[in-house]
Length: 466
Image 1 (spheres, rainbow, N blue to C red):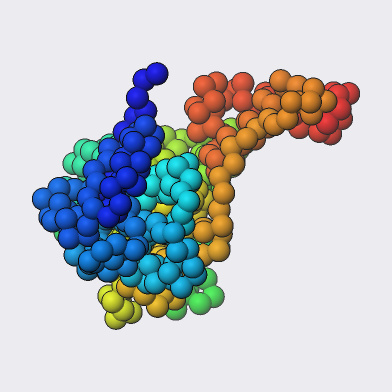
Image 2 (cartoon, one colour):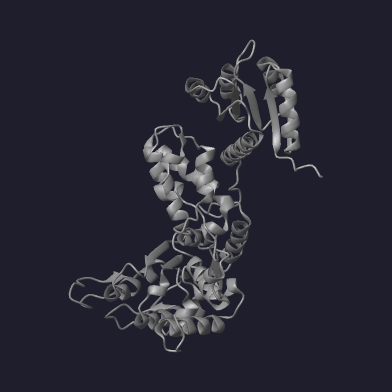
């Protein structure tokens, strides 16, 4: 038999040499690298010169006992979790150990498998703690555009694309799910461009009623409508020399799209009610969470305007596609909200960090930011705990099972499995059919044909059972 892979470095502390030898042999066979010491003082001296992932200590020892050792570790080596073992498994002893800083408590007689599982949890606990410390100390934002936060591969690629796009005068279309930070990307494009000295003007095409959006963009002259008592410059004119950010451009009314297209082509605007055109020098950055190619095919968005806006395309990845950034973002939000609230919250417990990393974050960075703001506001401790997180985060359990069961009557036909999987991919892609087709490895025409077949089947038009 080959040796099990190394699972971590363990320091066993027990004044019973036979117990040390027994644990060293059993844990060694389980894949742990084990060192032993027969007193707490010897263990502390070893920890001064060597590093271990976890300490396993007996309670009843000559000299310094296990509880006192836990207290010393909590004070001097808080990064090293301690697991206490004892034959005196009373509730009082367990409480004393946990209060002294122990990570876990196991009563004799020892079950080797139970101890190994506890060690695995402790090793993971320490790894998360070290990662949190590294994130707090490391300058991961060096070279990152604007307020964009990330150190993962997808974000490094985004930083590079933002830098290259910022050096041009081309229109940019920023796409991504709601809450991914599309406006932050737009601001970074402006701040790193030659137009950084000019204004950055943002407008949400979804937030302004259709009857007012035209006036907001193009301005109006006196008397153009009932309340138009004086002339007003539109946002295109206000952004002259800088950048106009059209957020949620996919929600722009179809009738207005033609006028926006002409303004971009002619680089001039005609105020509502006016006769003369006013030249404007502005760069356009647009953003949407919608699938504009599908909107074009459905007649809800002009193809010529899409081509005018989508000269350079930047897609902001969802948070689930860059899990390595979750703790970095969480720590940054924690520092911001703790400072604003005047609270001495400095970090996140490893258990809470594990829940943050495990959660799917359908609301992306915005949802994470809200969760950390809530946690900082409610916590009573210096570190955020699992209980400080929203219920849906610390109760979340990921499930990726598509087909279950071994009874043939419970198994689904292949076509049904495909239908369910396509539905899952569409849900994960936020309804973006172009992205879903790319993930599925098929062209959009094939995806549309399959979806139409599923709809026909559901309505009974093709005679098949739903």
